[in-house]
Length: 380
Ligand code: NAD
Ligand code: MG
Image (tube, rainbow, N blue to C red; front, side, top):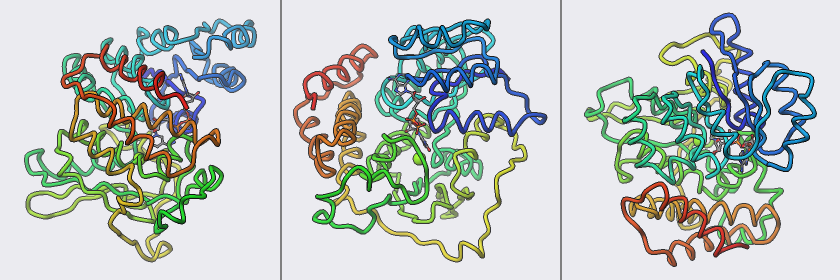
């Protein structure tokens, strides 16, 4: 199998390359193209190690640096959105791992679908912002859309336990993040250093903050709605502190099927790469006696208001999920730059959502314009 990895320098991208190494000998995967935003040193290393055909740096100012670094090789160096789209539509590529963070992944991922590539999707923001267009394109071009997000991979795997019409509801598990059980008062003084310490997962900065605000779970509800064609009302969030059950599906007979494994993104990445097969993994087994107990709680939507806001945007549909996502990206970036406080993230998202008139059945241009307008009008 030949793949392109969009976002190869990130948390998901680097773990995906480890999975490529792990699978050597059982399933040979050639990495034809990789991309990163600006880390040219890592891009160079990866391009040389995997002998890729293309290496793309999204930041155009870094183009000559990467070009110089790879001058003694045949590897083609590209930059910008155009370069990302060349990598995602490359002839001979079977699957594109979409693991850029945020809205920036939308256009290259859509182009990959339109050129018939199967998609392994980590970049949930693209599905949140353009769910209807995205899933229509997947159907139109007959490509496979394989979830990489651990919860969605778990739901996908659990769905094999029955027919689609037999599904009653989805139980989406959440770790609860680093601030589980805290009150709003206790959250006013939270600094980014505390929010960046996730109890169970090591991830990129943006999703780590989203996990602390529970916006991540909100985005995942919208992601599940599109991936599995279910109503928001039929998705229940269950806080499960140990992150062993990655999500569950309840069927009409009230049987619940779940997928369990230790918290490692290499599981869902590997399943997306090998589906419909399961191949051996060097990762550790779950030791139930060592875990001892598993706990479950209801989420606190009053303290973690981002979850409620995401549900609201998901129910409204149209351009509202795009507004929610863009406002959240602006707010998270501001929080990471110490410009706003932790609780301001939800306040900001709510303010921006209230100020926008929803447009139903948006085109891709409407979505791109809406995203741009939020970022320009509400710069922090
Ligand atoms: P990350 O920040 O570690 O990596 C992001 C990647 O995207 C990097 O390669 C970066 O260079 C690239 N990138 C950033 N901005 C870009 C831009 N403007 N243009 C082009 N490339 C750009 O993030 P991550 O944690 O790997 O997450 C990637 C995606 O996967 C996110 O959508 C996240 O929600 C999703 N996801 C991540 C995890 C996880 O465990 N890390 C789990 C589930 C889902
Ligand atoms: Mg997840």
